[in-house]
Length: 86
Image (cartoon, rainbow, N blue to C red; front, top):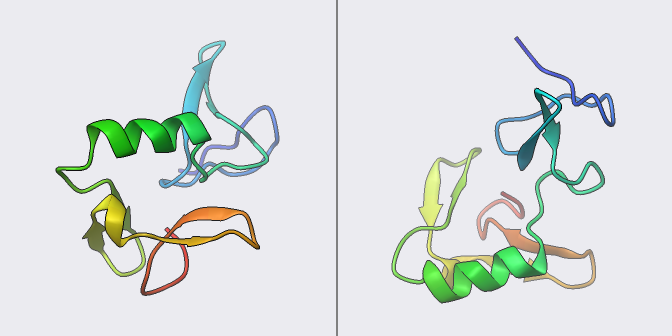
């Protein structure tokens, strides 16, 4: 069963970043459901440098933060090096 975000009416994917709101599951940021905030990226760099921080659902591979790619022109900051997004 797929669940829609009540804030934006889009389906919530397994890889989306979610919160609880009024007893419902919602996107943390409906405009960027899969992107990390700058604070979240900073926390990854400080606390998670010794373990995997992401898994690409398409290629089923786990990645260290240092292995992830960035695309500053498109605004995407965490991407699978094999597929171009996580």
